[in-house]
Image 1 (cartoon, rainbow, N blue to C red):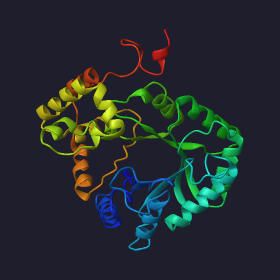
Image 2 (image 1 turned 90 degrees about the horizontal axis):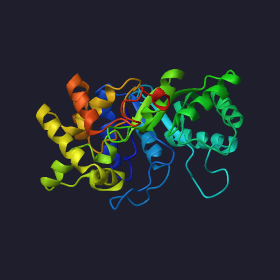
Image 3 (image 1 turned 30 degrees about the horizontal axis):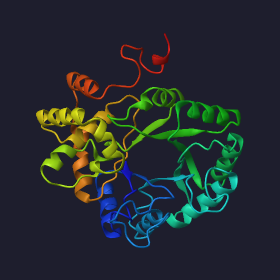
Length: 322
């Protein structure tokens, strides 16, 4: 699944278009974005970047023709602030309606295939949220709805509220999930499996910390894993990451590809969101589809990056029980 968070602030429009075209060539048709994407995330950010920039870039790409929109499963998100005024964030009925219309305009399309809540809204009743979403679906502006960054009980709450209104409910959950961050295994994955949701991991390489960061440091190359949440994760797991990179070297595989292959092997995972900054990164990531991790390798990865919960406990969600 193609993540577009870098498009605009980190990757030029020309390069972003090349990445999207190459994704289609590879048969990757699910594109994930968000209304807030486009903010500069570092010193390389371009002038004029801001929320909505990425959606606008994708919309202009659709306008170049060639059936690009028809061949794309388009997902965007709503919740995070798009301004400073009331009802310019969260999931109130007014903001959901305005945000959807604005995303459709920026993306130059008449409908969204998947509209995702970027976060749970603890202040808006589920009755209001589902009514707003139901209206969008009735109008043909959205086909399906998903969540992101939900706990397992949030998924259950959302699904039961939808069921009580005879609505379709959620079809997917997008969570941070990787070898170094496995908390979703305790309740999010079991809840998603129980309710039939697809799981879409974001940050599959923990901000680059699982992408061969130590090897790149030795070679004198810059790496995303040395900044942001990747740097924090590396600081607490340097020995494990070193052993992980050695394991990958023994397998003859790139650490980034092994990390993606591990996610693809997890029960309930539909597919990770990858956010390439170059065409070469996109091409290289496809190697993960050809990697099969045997039982011994999977066990070794569990030793290096243990699953959450007490050792010897029942598999989640029964890990809490005795």
